[in-house]
Amino acid sequence: MVALPTAVGTWWYRSIRFSGEQVLLDTTQMYFYFCHKTPSMPLKRALMILAASCEFDKRHNSEIIERITDNEEVPMLLRELPNLGEKNKEQPLCRPYSIKARALLHAHLSRMRLPPDTLECDRRYIVSRCPDLIVEMVNCVNQLIALAYARRIPRLPTIETIENCMKLSPMIVQGLWEYKSPLLQLPYITEDHLKYFTNRKKHIKSLLQLAQLPGEERRQVLRFLNDKQYDDLMKVLGNMPYIHFQVNTEVIDDENSTVVTAGAIVTVTVFLRRTNMRELFGDTTIKEKEII
Image (cartoon, rainbow, N blue to C red; front, side):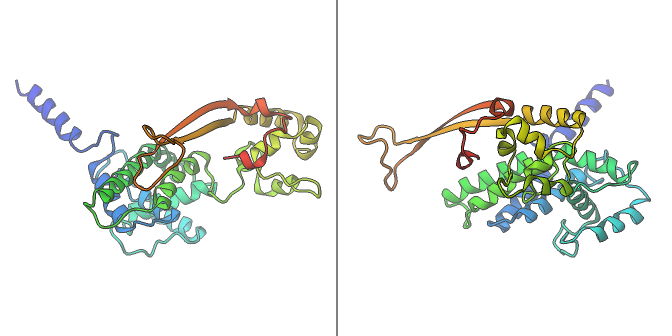
């Protein structure tokens, strides 16, 4: 008779701590606070707030492992990372768990090697939790924008704020900073190899440009790879997504639906079609200006 109420009570207590996205409510409240406090949020500030999520704090998440080796390994990692902002005094951005998570995210984006049995395990766990947290952060900014338009809060978050929050997702998935070359997503390609993509005739900056090269010319550019490595790279490149999209804007129930005037309700319709990059191998009909 006692076991069932105890089990139900335990389940209820745990469930009320999370939002619909299975994100801790304390984390959601923190996102609301900082996004409202900083309506124009730079990218690194958004990353700093993401790293301060309560999911990375052992007091809120029993899956977090605190090791004695952190006392040595984390300070060593901090010394290798510039512009980490570890001297920030804001709570909880200045707390040890937040600084550690921020350092691991910076190391992930910089593709640094970490101790395999300690910090590398922590990095993998933090990265695995980031997609849901980023979705929650974007939702918080969206709600703040709606509240600002309803004049319930004084400051409207800028478009750069929500854009920077959304940029975190591809950055974390690709393990690259925003300003890094997209060619580094390909296997066997490192910073040292980027010089091979630039010559007097061509300057290859994107995956699309690489895919559009004729086969012999592409193999010449990738001459530093052996045949097996080249085949692996081409398989990965061929499976990369390429999105065709078309955007239509119109004012419904208006005589001239293509004219947008002040106060008009505009309907935006977006058509998306996903294909693989292999369909573009050697195809030069798609111009660089169409790349999104």
